Image (tube, one colour):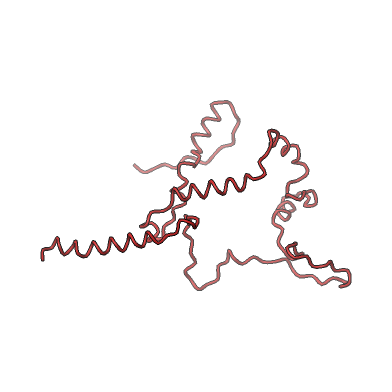
Length: 183
């Protein structure tokens, strides 16, 4: 047996196994471009969300009737907490979390109408984009992160946009300097 034929006899089954492994991915599932895995036995600190302290009311007879799906007084309220931390009034927020002072801005932004199903439309379009730009089999095997490669052509060139706006006379804040690439 020659050296070339021995190599072919080993490489063909290996290539067939890799092709079979790549074919195992289901097209019904959303492509997983972000490859974050907790491979340790330690707890994931980003999954643990502290709740507000529990409070015992003075009179348990005045407790509201439990309503499935409604909020709990111990649940986090990140938007209201952020508004309060920045000096605003959480009570000024409407049901959608938009301050009443922003109602004129919201009305102007929606002056040509709004699409109530925009979130569903964007989710469908993004899923189709991720399927078209899914990771290659070797990237999956190597457990690499394909998110930035998939969305690279949608990234804004900060420096070019800054220069474009300045050329039009728009006053823009300073930006971080461009990253110099080694030659």
